[in-house]
Image 1 (tube, rainbow, N blue to C red):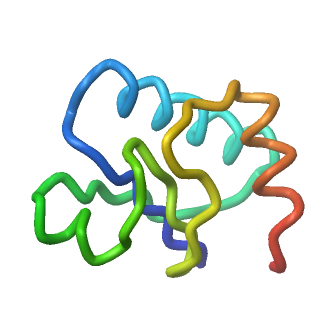
Image 2 (image 1 turned 60 degrees about the vertical axis):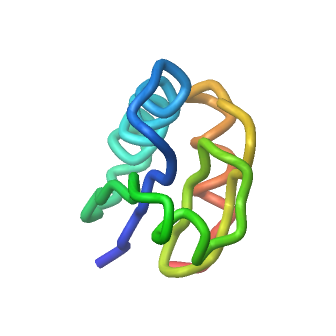
Length: 80
């Protein structure tokens, strides 16, 4: 099962990024566990600009909020 971490403080951008990510997962029919990394030390571990998405410990989005369609393209390009 895919593990998706949405990284960043709970603000408008992080919420929109999570929404786009969940939309993409649903579109692709991917079952995934979606987790949040909100604390400063957890964010620092990934060394990313926030908001970010980490899939199975690989950073796939950093410092931007793609649309649901863009997230679908990003996620469908990942190995199964």
